[in-house]
Image 1 (cartoon, rainbow, N blue to C red):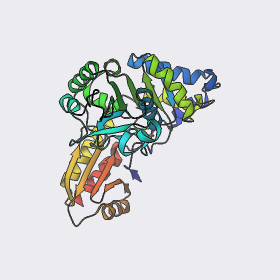
Image 2 (image 1 turned 90 degrees about the vertical axis):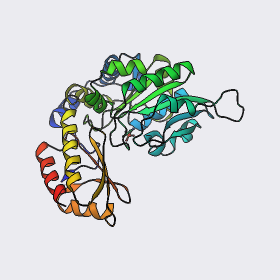
Image 3 (image 1 turned 180 degrees about the horizontal axis):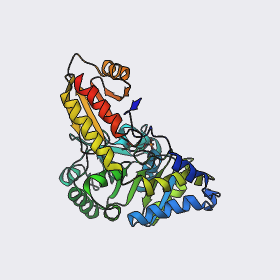
Length: 338
Ligand SMILES: *Cc1c(COP(=O)(O)O)cnc(C)c1O
């Protein structure tokens, strides 16, 4: 099977498993797990930020950051497409008692001017306190769209002038950096907190890291405990993250080249209507009526290809380190002739 449903379907490689088995571990809650400590230091150093927290999932790192930045009743500005709003089970409200001000756009990116329009006047009793601006890079539901770095800087300046926190959901930040050529420290200098996923394109079986300033990490460690994310000999899985950061970053451009090939093949396909491709590892496309996503998925499954339904007529394909160039070539040949 050529599994293009998600970059989360990857299995740890033999080299990664071997490295995991050799991890030196201890009780993470006592601060005594060498592999967890190494991963957290590695991530903080890489981004030039104070400290980091290893967590089981990207949902947890995002939700910890939101809780550390806000108080109940506050408001978070984010895209309507944002993972924190669409795909974290209503966690912004559930965990933090916060509301959201949603920005509409084609690909989940937006400008500082639009953010400014969504900031409430703190003197107005009717309005929630706006406390945090959240952006996602790349944008999952924006077909892997990558932010314009200068716009991210303008939003930083706005956050500074209005005393707002600035959080980056960087589940696929390494994909963004593979596309925009920016360095982790450049992102680290812009944001108060960054969440990165090790279990997506980087190929680890589990894990995300929240990287931030010392105060957010101090509060975050307590919140991680409350959320049930304080693990014990987690070094075995943290080691997978160390291995991923060392070995699986530079190859992300292969995934981007493969996704571009899929996008081109889908343009040739007679059943597709609109192809959205943000230049990284995600392609989202719609089908011409009467074709349906369910029918299309069944057809491609019979050819050994799996993809994900994202709407009645829309489908997502994601490339990753467990689909090779040959499989992509096969998939392209099939898709172009459907
Ligand atoms: C996958 C993902 C996350 C985190 O998901 P988990 O499954 O909880 O690790 C966060 N944000 C985005 C944009 C994602 O794609």
